[in-house]
Length: 215
Ligand code: GTS
Image 1 (cartoon, protein in one colour):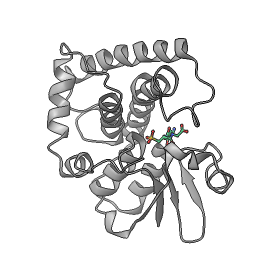
Image 2 (cartoon, rainbow, N blue to C red):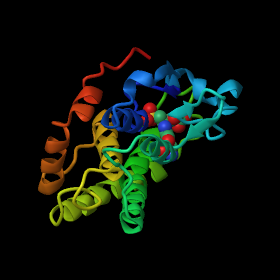
Image 3 (tube, rainbow, N blue to C red):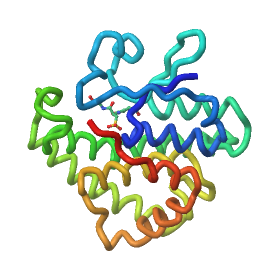
Image 4 (cartoon, helix red, strand yellow):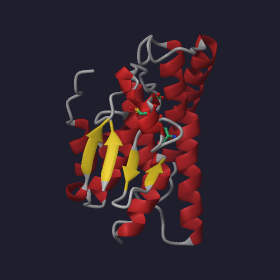
């Protein structure tokens, strides 16, 4: 299978971490799509993903899967252990809820801040910025960090007792926060301690070691 991505991007990182956790990295060909040149908005890429975002997984028969959560669910179903999306109906429901919450309250909020209240991908790509909305979403992300801190004061992982794709989504949030220089507040001690533990996982360490390619 092929994955269209940008190696250090926070969303592509989610799929790369999932692939490493599932020991599937060796079967993947990565195809870079240069976000700073706006390649994700070109017709040939939009034919693969209508939304014009990375990552996209392309199967041998040309079927394309976009959206990190959908791709992770697919990869998780390919090989058994470790499961990233839960075993029981309740586990699956909670993991999906917390993954979506990680997106809405942290990762996507930081992305909106990046694209609207910072230079983002540059003037050629960011043609429709709304600074006020970007700052609003930055504050939402900061509130989200406090929420996840409260969650982690009660349980070891984002969706309960085990590492899942919900943890990977919050790790993506940390990667984006670092890229846009939005520090996680020091008082979020449980969240910061959790992230220190996450950085010890080989899948995460491998991802964080990638040197950003030149734009
Ligand atoms: N909901 C999508 C998902 O979960 O896959 C969001 C994907 C996304 O926003 N990806 C970024 C993108 O393609 C890549 S990165 O910021 O993580 O590197 N952005 C391009 C754009 O034009 O918004």
